[in-house]
Amino acid sequence: MCDTLYKKTADGFLFGKNSDRSPNEPNLVLFHSAGIESDPVRRCTYIGIDSVAARHGVAIVRPSWMWGAEMGVNDAGVVIGNEAVFTRSKGKKTERLTGMDLLRLALERAASAADAVRIVTALLDRYGQGGNCGFDKPFYYDNSFLIAGSDGAFILETCGSGWIVKDVSDAGNISNMLSQDGPYLMTSGPGLECFARKNREPVFTFFAKAKGRSCQAADALGKPGFGVLEMMAALRSHVPSDTSILFEKGSVGSLCMHKSALGDHTTGSMIHVARKTASTTWITGSSTPCLSLYKPTYFGNAIPPVFLAADESLTYWLDREYLVRAIYAGFVDPAGYRHELAEIQNSFVDGDERLIARKATAAELKAFQKACSDREQAFVESRREAIDKIAENPLVLPDLPPLWRRKTAVLGDNVFAHSLSARIQGK
Image 1 (tube, rainbow, N blue to C red):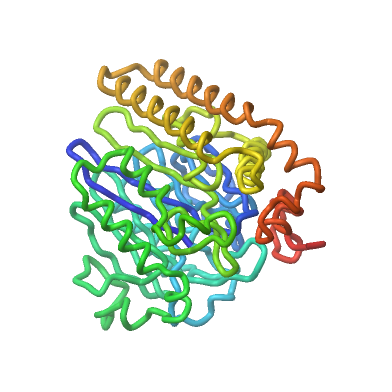
Image 2: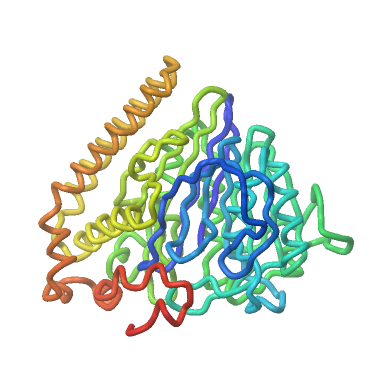
């Protein structure tokens, strides 16, 4: 479950996404440079497909065990986020391309947002979508996508092999529900009027509380003066009824999702600020945006939270996940922690805006990314005792809310295993 938001600006656009998945499922942040494909087959999560001659460079956020990605940006400035949507389609258990595969393939192959729409729909028509997408339980769904670039933004919703495309003029968002009933820019064929109403599966859609989260996102986007700090606030936000139960019971009802008995958890978050000059991608590299810092990154710089190696990204994510759970266990004061986090976050945003305003060089932006990375690492290290107490001493597990005890006991186990049975072995 996820939420993706888009807002056009005077000089580009703002794009934000929370990736909501199993709380023990690491979201890795990886950079892959542009290159030439030598293998005629591109291996994806479950199937292989025909390669293309060349691929774009991409910075992606992906579940540890998948080939595909939840969100990302490429060297042409195309940004994509996807959502699980619950539909009436059949055959979801057949292993085909996952929605995350479609997203990464589009980033690797697209030179514009419109190009990405063409690529996703062509792949969907040829190969279809399907296969388990759950980390520690079976989970099957179709997908929707929010695709943006310098040429505009588009919402693409699917149901099995059927799809519709709607263009976004000023602002738009998607959540875990089919929502588009026309008019459409394009469709996969005739007879797709009222696409959402005809194809939406009502039970899962209702319990996902997607409508409420979609309204929260739309309300945030509609406020005047919406900028990067407002996007961060939206992705960190909780409805008032959730604030007192976040650690103990959790809820799927807020944009910043906290694990509940039936729901997922925000395991990664990304914001992209597209400008005519240099663009900035803000990435947590960790779960729980309300307890995490967005770090500024500039495309092509493999500086934390961006990595070249999956195992290094995993170490980074796990370290911060133990910190989140130390807060849940009461080993870190949430109020003091959040106050310091807000001060650091504001300094990061101010620094980025000053550099962009004076047209800083690529070297200056890279140095700033490194300085912010180091400061965030120091912020984490100042809580090292609490992190180690959770990570190394099982006796502290009773201090965690019951919902989190079993999860924390197996955190980090089998996270790269390809099959569901291997990932849950011994759990």
